[in-house]
Image 1 (cartoon, one colour):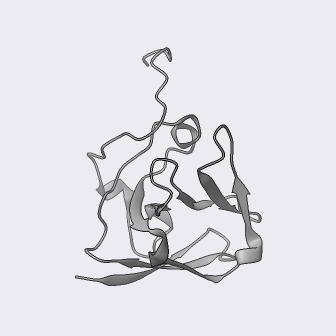
Image 2: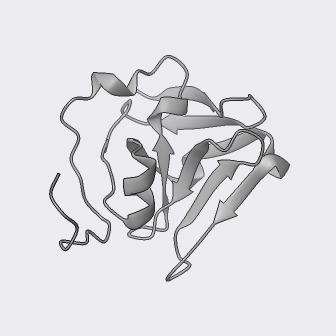
Image 3: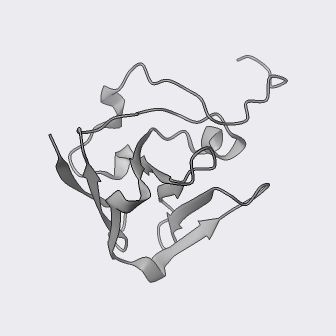
Length: 124
């Protein structure tokens, strides 16, 4: 069930084309310090499955700590579109809220992992 889906930032400056071999799969949240703050839900795809069709020059990249993960966001509207994963640099984590016609709130039970959970954070 291969699908080609379009994904955009909020202002439309950045447009991606993503190939999903089996639809949206490997949906998860990451508990690293950055992803916890963004709070976004991602789907994983091989790096070869993402194509930037517009706005490469509008993307900024943020890296920290090991500098392996590369978090991309639009310079204009600030929306995080995707990131190259630290746990698997051969994959991108795609912000599913940026994919046309996807409602991220539909996914009620989203696994969490692959980050650097700080157990010393207070429970709310």
